[in-house]
Length: 91
Image 1 (tube, rainbow, N blue to C red):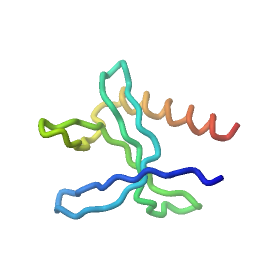
Image 2 (tube, rainbow, N blue to C red):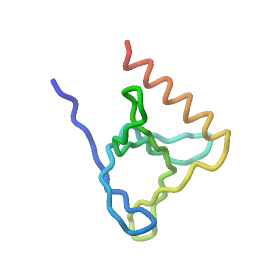
Image 3 (cartoon, rainbow, N blue to C red):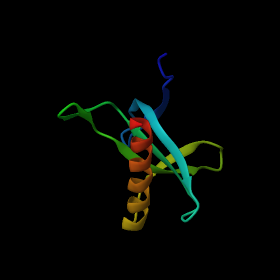
Image 4 (tube, helix red, strand yellow):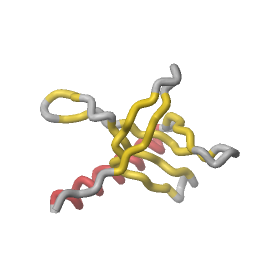
């Protein structure tokens, strides 16, 4: 059975819309922030794709915006979660 994939529309700084596949969405209690891991399925070589990670912010009008991850501490926690998910999927 094929797994259902979720997609979002990302609008870049030039106003261009791109479809991105959602890989992971989670909240870190330590930072009180929500994170989104997604891809545009861009080739990275060696049968890998480029993966992006952003902080998800909710705007006053109820929409969502993406912001860059700012600290090494956040990146460390995000990488730990991604490793955990990959390990679970391999089992």
